Length: 71
Image (cartoon, rainbow, N blue to C red; front, top):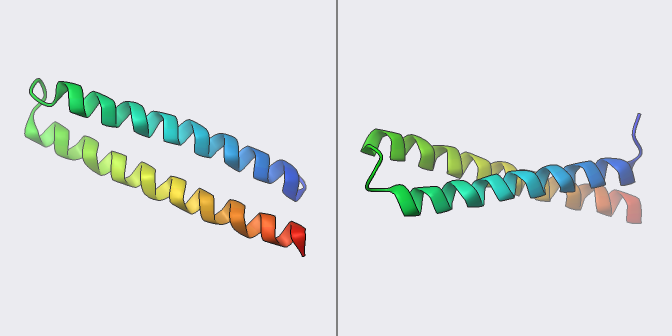
């Protein structure tokens, strides 16, 4: 089983990867909005919102683990 420091590092790496993908998706939507259908845009925006919610949840988990380490 991983210790808290390893888990925090893994979560931060996952958060960085998801944030990067989210940024790329937002950039794609901004630059190709005319070329894709409204339904596709809507689905991609829902995916973007879900990715942002997930990174927020990862942020909260990392903060919780860091507090546990400090205690």
